[in-house]
Image (cartoon, rainbow, N blue to C red; front, top):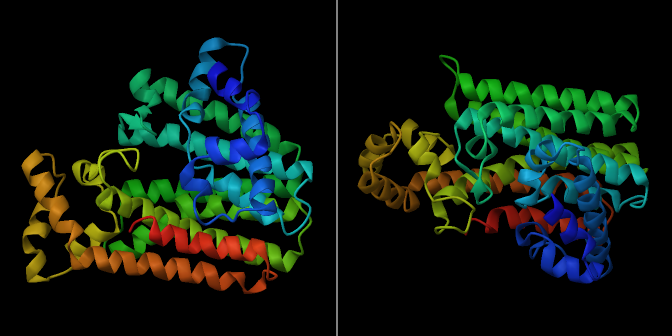
Length: 352
């Protein structure tokens, strides 16, 4: 954690932090230059400082484990959306930063648990906590971060606690449903999209809700931004799944086709398995089970990249991005609405 704290404390200016330290996948082309970009960069610097404090502990090993994933980087997508929603009210309200940190701590905690469940060796280009230490350490570290998030949340009032509790229920429900799989007779694609709404969309929606609420935004606009958050959150997760297929080695933080090797059926594979296109017969055969053989993995990845099923999955991604954009009708014209609309474009074009 010392390195992470030093990285924050050594920042020479907000502008330099904006350009050099913020993950490119978050700031990206969708965020405008000028006053809005500088305000968000300043807000993110505050979030980063608060995150560093939140993972601190008087016990060195706890501090190291809790800061492990935070120090590895990340998109800070949820805090960014909270801060952007807050721009429609009073972005300087202290509860805005606290609520953004709650969402990021919750997200980080779920990653520790996810890596145990998935037996993932790498997260964000670094050894996962369960690989570096043990499953028990990873699980307990996730619990530690949940506790820190709850402590911050208590200062935001009972309604915030209620919203977070319901969000957490959805996160867990989504994880359970993903683990168990679709019930007999359920459409696997519908099940997949519902899981994404619970596992990813719910917390992104809460980030937008918290940012707008604590900035004093009008209730109707808070609801529109919450709905936007859920739709764009699902779109972002679909695009992450597609990146696992279309990205070159190293550009997405993990080896291309990791989901194929692990037998995780994301949207393109679900379309392959549900279809009867003769052109995808060989691909169906390959992805019916985890593709662990190197030659078959390379073949499957190549076929999938040029498949009609990948095109169908990309069309679904666009549908979610368009639905998110439709929620912006309630947002007043200006830089914030333009940035949110550009985010809808970004989640699609990042897979191109």
